[in-house]
Image (cartoon, rainbow, N blue to C red; front, side):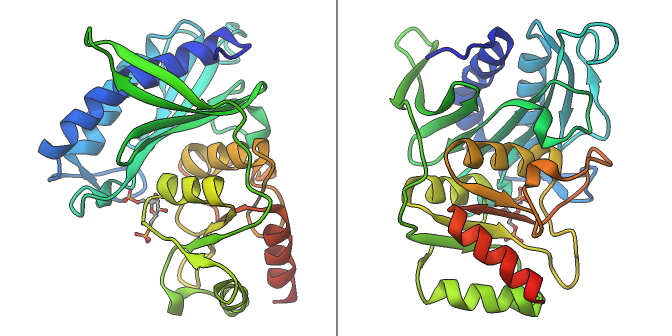
Length: 298
Ligand code: AFP
């Protein structure tokens, strides 16, 4: 199923084309690279490999003006950054291997992609598409754009190419929430979030895997709420706005859910820096409204 926007289509073709190769390389890249990324986090060999492969594939897409990665300090000019007169160019932001610390424990992880029609750092309202690849028991890709939200299975075909088959053409959040997953450590949660978490624990089942893409996919599949909240030790939380929060908020909102940074939609968070962090809450609308009320009550 193609996107109405040919560049968006080409970006997700490129992401899908790299997925089998990244997945095949994971077993041999569970080691530390000995480097840190712009967010000061240690980087695994898997992060660097995925970043390299995706960087090459995405910057080669006609219509992509610039590329930014969680693993890179600055943007890569891919032939006419947006706003430099090549107004048809888009800016693509990725987290090449979200949840890479799950490599050692052999748990789910994935790639997050945001396609913006504005120079980065950009507002979530400038997204024209967003998606993620999930390396679970099978490799799937969720893509959200103006046409809607769809889920595909991505696999190598008999000729060594890549086969994409749509398994859900109209992915939407189930009306009845079932699961929740909250990041950070309980003692580090502010009191208002802890009270909210206690109320949710009485109602829903805990599903927290330590990789945002896997945990958000649980919420999209079963309904519920995912949060990496503001922490007492870090009021901006942990997740990055450009590469993680904006794309996921775009996907969940397009799927009929809601997002928040604690006060309003993630997509309205003012972009200030490429690697800025934000608290992230996404899921069923009623649960997000309840969260904002809980944080309001202080
Ligand atoms: P890694 O990519 O370093 O594994 O971090 C994953 C992540 O950015 C996001 O995918 C998770 O939701 C969150 O961090 C998990 O953080 P905790 O390890 O603090 O639970």
